[in-house]
Image (cartoon, rainbow, N blue to C red; front, side):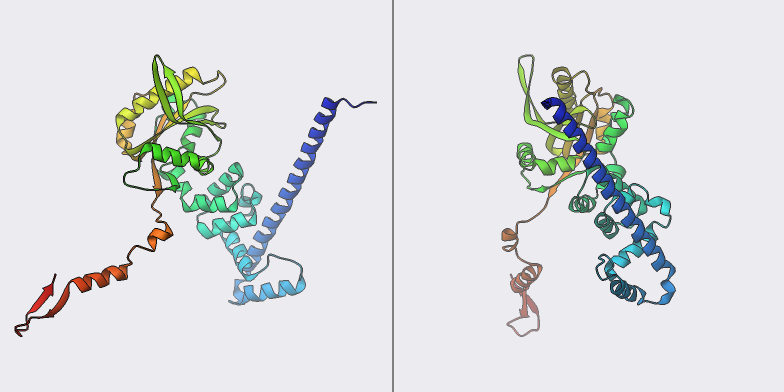
Length: 353
């Protein structure tokens, strides 16, 4: 009997999916058990604090003697367990998302922040985005929590988008966006920033956030008999809409919002599918006054957010080596303004310039 190839491969794919799903659940279960174990050990250490300052050192030694093949019970790791149990003293808090993180992610969170609220926020983001530990550290060091939840946002999403689309769009917006892979220069122009963003598209997408897919830069639109070019065009799979990004190397001006509104109308008319949500615009400027931006967006009928961006002030090592140190500058100043006695022997002080 011959096997129908289509039916066979469909069945094979379903079985593969089931196996992979079961493997993932098994790994996740083991991870949760490890996190709960570490929390319980941390509670024991806290409850046994009366045994003295050498308690953890002695504990690490004796556990190693009892379980010579076991790993993860060093003095350093036992201290992390104590800190973990101190931060989350209620075992109910160890359910998702914390119990679904790796211990290495949790160590990074405890190293970089001591706020339960912030740790839980980043934990959710790790699971949503599949961040590695290194990416998590980068997001913490660039203060993503503050930029996405605390910093003032200038946008008209609540007025121009229905719920829950408006909440999701607002959550996606950051202020400022940090493009620390682009070196700042006084005379840098929009096209140069755009080129660097495209050249480092993986880093750009990471900074923009979850669900962004790059469509094109200087995206050509023909309206009437005129040609127009969108700086950057993306599609967001979570928002299910096109996202138009315009870059400005200087300070925000109200007229920029009008031009972006025009682009959004064109994109909605020419590119948007009937199943897509309304396109969203993000205007990125070097500087932005929030009140000015809010006035500019007040009567705009398309969803637009205005944010600042930050570039890196990194100085290449080969250039840094040629720059004078603080000590060099001090020596030069002292040499240039040398204090000496007056030749007339009067005791007056003179300065060579």
